[in-house]
Length: 147
Image (cartoon, rainbow, N blue to C red; front, side, top):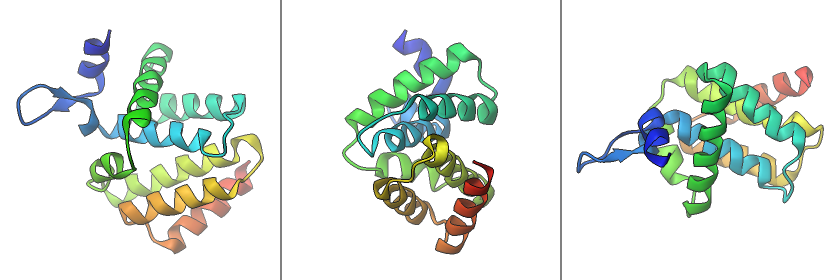
């Protein structure tokens, strides 16, 4: 099963083996999974929001989303910091980076609560991938207005 997931979401590493960390979908999913748990509790609304975001953003089936979330959760638990994810995401186009921050804010506001640790994580990721404070704040206000 892991090989199938790796084929679906992975790239190639230096030795030719599949390396799923090269895939922006997996990196984005891992950050969303981490964000949902950063306040110590993953609400049902946060989980459903992540599933909806991944389905809509990447045109995945329910089964593919479920597999992606399992792999993202595993990679999140293995990661010592955000660099493994943000180093890949930093290569994205500016519009895709903004979209990632928008997705993160959607998870933050999914449960109608905004914990300071969630704010801090979005700020750190935005800084690491080169999204300005201004853009991050504008996206926050836009998403908060939608919720």
